[in-house]
Image (cartoon, rainbow, N blue to C red; front, top):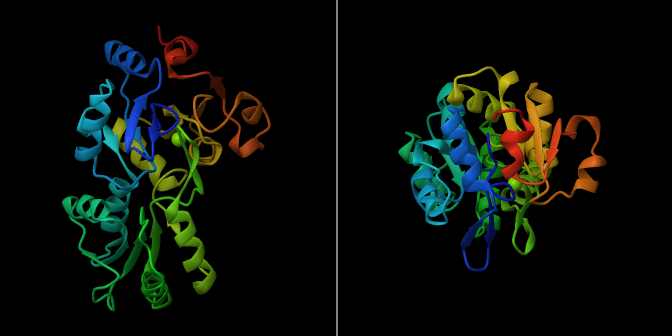
Length: 265
Ligand SMILES: [Mg+2]
């Protein structure tokens, strides 16, 4: 499983553009040639896979729509498994579109959210106090408290960028006294989803990423293999200083080194 930001790409947030990380396209093609199954799972929830995957292909990364997943993909499964019927969504139109395509009934914070049985907080740069109020009321009324990501920052070309959902989660959590259940990395939901998609045991999943919390903690807690890159938000020196629950099994400079370092030929 590959992370996107800092692992396969660096995005330029101001221009809304991507650059592929050197060696990434070749590494994915090499895995395809070797017949090693892989998927990409980003913690970015702003776009549906069918919107984001073509943009990756434009910069040369051979990522088919069906191999790209987001926390919305995982959330749709958690919502279905939990039997939740009506979900209050704090997110952009892209988040709502992605969930609705996956069969979720979404209600905006301005809508009638009285009988929502789950709240889902995702990429929502236009969050307002009434939105936070609506989420708090629903959670206090017993709705499940789900979020795409509870990680504060992610890597971009200009350095670290702010994770909006984490800040909104903090506000709702402070008011309600309840912690959100992330569907993105490092949650157990995400690792279960990845293993399901790859059709292998969790212990056999190589989690490749640049973030100690999102990817390495997920790998360590779930018994998978943590493969850290230094092409994103974490340097080799910083990887060497991680606590045991976030320490990678392997550190590589970028994913161009992956196949050789993992003995894949
Ligand atoms: Mg990343």
